[in-house]
Image 1 (cartoon, helix red, strand yellow):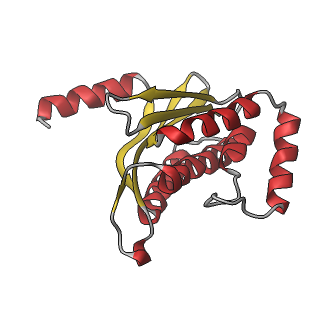
Image 2 (tube, rainbow, N blue to C red; image 1 turned 90 degrees about the vertical axis):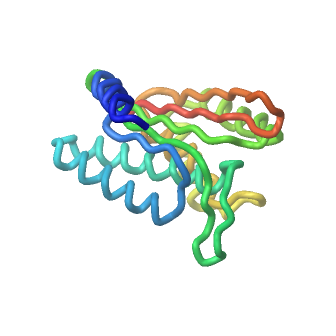
Length: 183
């Protein structure tokens, strides 16, 4: 990247109040480092504690979903866990913050994700809180790498319904999954 391109991107990000942006491979170690950076940025910029908690929680869930479910990965030694490709962004729109994440998914998973997100969009905030509590008590579902709580956590912390979309690429190998939460 040329120096000019760097400054063009920096200007673009600043004009749109982008606070944090990462695109590349995610691992647990990278998530930990990013989470610390996000936490410090929010604290030093005087973001209220309740907003910080919700932003931080949702950021970690989105990053974890990339590590667990992105269809693009690098081989990793067993001790290092999974290394998967995606992106995450935090920005500000007026008084609210937004979180965006994107990662490739297998086409076979699109309808499963769409159904889960559509069901979540039809739920009231009370329904989301109740489903969250129920998931806390339930075991890990078959095929899940967590307690199936990522979307519930983000939806619980959001101030508006989650937005999602899918975009097929030129090949049928992967579909890009996009998720946006307003906090």
